[in-house]
Image (cartoon, rainbow, N blue to C red; front, side, top):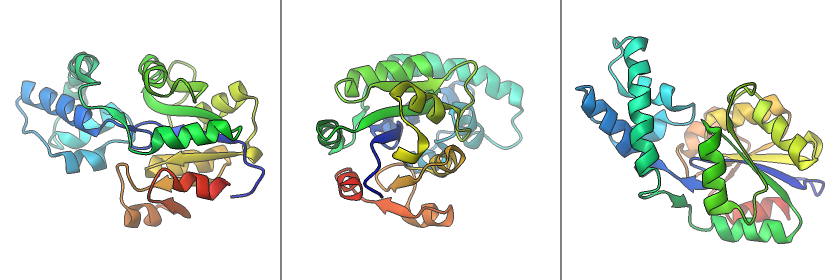
Length: 217
């Protein structure tokens, strides 16, 4: 990374926030309610990254129609709203890394395909001291991998693409960064492994949150 970077846009799930246990439990709850077999956490690790409808589609048998999936989504949301903080929290080392970045003058945002109200609430709860902008799914802003959320975040931060970098854990994040015209740092503590990320075109891959500092300083 170059010394001109002063803005960092983070993905949420699998990057700054470990949500996999609670997401797994809530989707499995829905599957059981509709008479389907539960899935493992390792399976969900591959399913998440492109929104809840995509994850449920991956979890149910292929022949299940979209109308059934549409019925499942509100059941998921009702359960997840109650249980989304049972085991969710920042990954080890994230808060220390965000603190160091803030102290060194970096502007930071979080963008996620979660619903906007949840993204803002989670950011406020866990990262509010460090991250000034949090954007989720909402009318008028296309979901990732479209660049809309990143563009909106940069506008709110008063930054531009030339001075920004994206940090995420999935192929969706790589594509989002490309569409936004900014470099991507891919992380290995989230939902995807190294080989998969390399296959999807990852150039910069890190193993621990503190490695972000090494890439930028």
